[in-house]
Length: 125
Ligand SMILES: [Zn+2]
Ligand SMILES: [Zn+2]
Ligand SMILES: [Zn+2]
Image 1 (tube, rainbow, N blue to C red):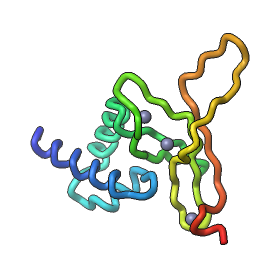
Image 2: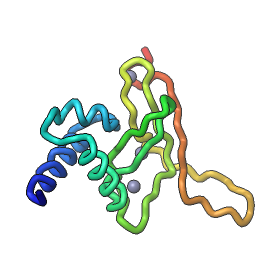
Image 3: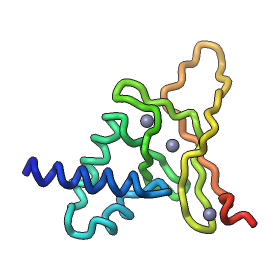
Image 4: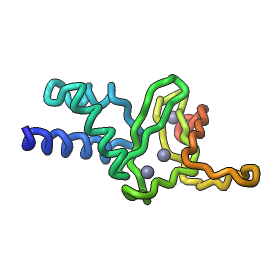
């Protein structure tokens, strides 16, 4: 069981790493076929979130997507960036620009959820 789990983790990690786009649980399930079941994918993705390996993005379609964390650790996730969904090719990506959002005095942000849809640089012309 533990061994199968390790393999599933590796498969999911590889497919997240190879993807240019953030992926949903559905997309992962399609890629992995019958090799890893739904509950396992769900559990592994959430444990990756806890470990600071991936972050969860709530899309404007109401679905969750998962993307690789660049500078995160188990203790500190830093996600002051927007996510962009392309209406043409469907890619969801982390925008590289880190943002400083002004908040009223005394407010301390924990979670940032910014989302933009439109046309990516490949599709906009
Ligand atoms: Zn993170
Ligand atoms: Zn596009
Ligand atoms: Zn991101």
